Length: 156
Image (cartoon, rainbow, N blue to C red; front, side):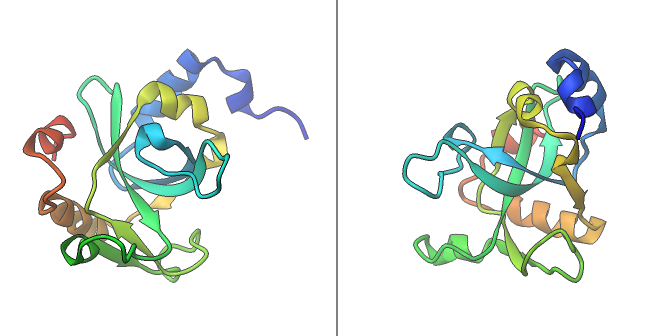
């Protein structure tokens, strides 16, 4: 199989093509690291494949705000944070392997440069319905872990 267009383009060219076309509600799957707040699953790993949902970008497109999709709710966190997990179903989002939960307790960030470095053309999986996106953003706004400054940074 030949090289993909993502392999041929420079990061600057990818940025110019990709970043303007990333919107709230877009779902991606890529390898994320502790730098983005994602803990690798196995000892010795540096990153982990995660599905995540774009919830905003900074005005200059330098930072992308997102929430992660988890297979299960972490029972080691407070009940308050457990309640901030929004269920999504395979029937609505067929890219999922099983019914899952959007963690609305934390607003995570990735720099545009890191996003582009890890972006592969097939990384975009789908888009949330407007109803789900509104409910997820509403839950995110109610999280005790998300600051007004973060919300403002991403236009929320």
